[in-house]
Image 1 (cartoon, rainbow, N blue to C red):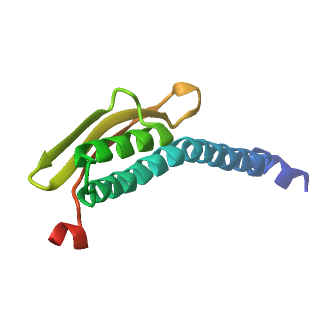
Image 2: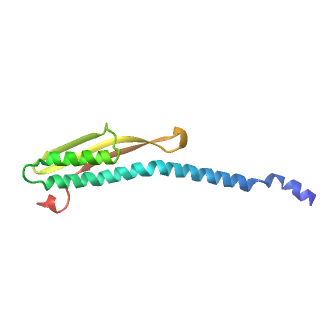
Image 3: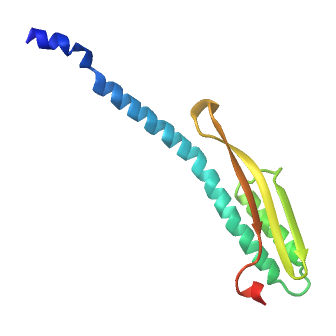
Length: 135
């Protein structure tokens, strides 16, 4: 019994180290998710708001100018979704169709302490789709 315990002394403690490595990996993945998911959600939500804004601009009547309606809606959505103020926002009207183009880059810290920062790039052109665009 003494002989077998001497040969196996190097195997002791390996389960603790493996558990520590797994926990460390889970913490790193969790940290990346906590930082990236809100930025990606805000980008996807802003895309939907842009698409809604151009359809609203297409549906305006009377004294309201379509470009002003789209611009106001996109500016409110940009503030609600934490879009950087240096984002390039271009709203154009051709005939009766209003299109909106927004592009920006946001830095997301995926690893703790700023070890690795990911550049989230948003570039979307919203054009009216659906029933109103067919008319």
